[in-house]
Length: 217
Image (cartoon, rainbow, N blue to C red; front, side):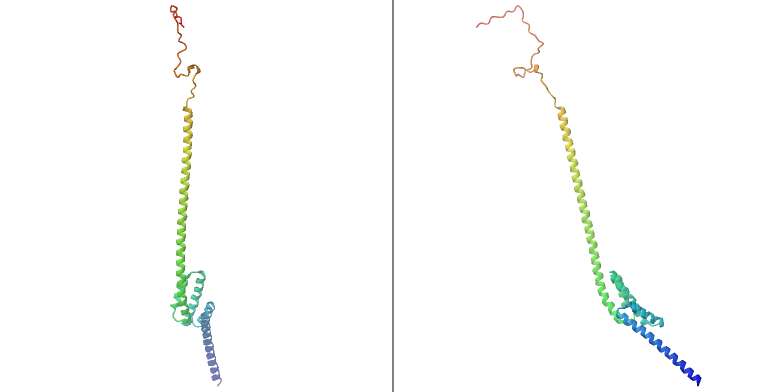
């Protein structure tokens, strides 16, 4: 009789432990699902991790854990503006078997939005590069024009300096080549004639035998 009682108590204990364990696992999975679909991804990962510790073969809990982990990554990538990585994570979520159907639907909606944002980001980046290239080209053209203008002005100034020096040199040569002519007063005729004066050294001797005829008045 005593043996029967002991066996019954042991059997009841086993059943109670089994029921408690099943209820615990079910609670972790269900609570994890609620947290996941409420977008509390960190909390969902903790609950679902506990469920997997109790039953490592629970594919439903494993799938939801992966969904929670990737959705958390999506949020981080969105905050960084890394839409390309966010798209990769969302595509992975939609391909996970089992898991939460609500999260799959959310991932699909966010995927379309994320692709649009990524496309706009790419267009903005392409425009920025184009504008930067155009600005650099304009800057180079302006610099080239300013350099050319500076060279032309410098060349003009050099030419003016050379021309001024040449004119000064010619003026100096002209002054040196102009003779300072001074006419001796004894060579200029007193009557204003341009004919040269006779040599003053020449004297006219009147012969003694020649008499001058008287002037008849």
